[in-house]
Image 1 (tube, rainbow, N blue to C red):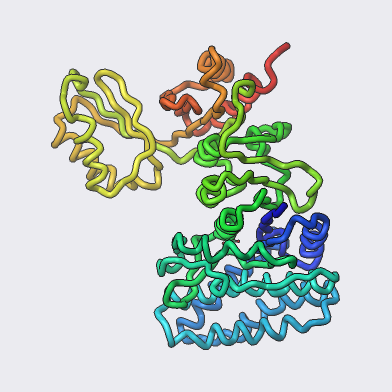
Image 2 (cartoon, protein in one colour):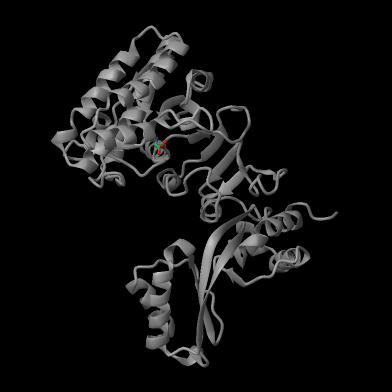
Length: 454
Ligand code: ASP
């Protein structure tokens, strides 16, 4: 058996949490590949090491002194080394490493330099954690992503995996030692360091799990599991024990953000079960995300909601007979470079749901003018301040009366439904409502689907 596990920034933020991580790794001999983030926040007022590195890089690019920043970042790592009595002077190595990175400032383009600096968080985090594991008597080694063959495109800050990496990384699982692998970055074919988007250590973990054909990918974070509704709205929401990848995508879309849905695609494609677990209670089973699951017994798995949406509503009598109307309407958005989310429609009307931030007032006037002019519509209007509710579950397609239950629950909470949409996959139902009604709508839906009267 071979498990790949990944620990996020809050799990490696200080000596205490790193000790916890090492306990978890050593408790199971199958945990042989450990992917780590850079130290995150120790409390709400703290700064993540990645953000400290970005600030340091900006100073270097502006020609300002960086020594105080380099010192501050080194201290974050030294606290871990000293706090866990590690005899190897890793902090000295890290200090030299950071200075060497800063010294590259004039030798490369700014975006490439920024990635070199950002990678210093994960890279040095892996070195410290490997040293702590060795100090605990384990056979552990730091592995450099570039040397191991994690190849990325040269899109600095937004790099993509080059597929040749899988074959190169496959041998990582062959030794009998614990591999400690930094998340978030890799190397371009030209040998430059490039990073994934922020939060990208999840992507590294998922890629390694796929490359070594792991039996599972454990993603350790600071929550117990994915809950059936946002616990800030429904404090007693039940934990979801199993989710299919598609359910996860739908929930993530509307605000569930425990693991990044795109990040887990490599592991999902390779058919590897993913577990979301809590570093602070590893005995808790967490949530299992599987490629497919038997949904004939489960109906709704979760209710998500997200505000910040608006609609452009267009009305034109006999729209249904006008060939190409929808295409021309959407073409206006395409032309203006605006992406949209959904397009519910009726016989004489069509609405476009989009994120409010994609339609500032200048763009709104431009788009409305073009719709009036090019499409000769009877009416067009914009409504802002909307929230979307998503009721998600693969099992909904086998169940009768799901929409009735949902609309009754919304009526009971006196929530006016502005819009409804059910995708053809029947895996989710979407309702558009006024943003101020969002929380009571979620509570009422949760009650209807998860706490129905006996
Ligand atoms: N340290 C990086 C960030 O803060 C990547 C990660 O933690 O996944 O975005």
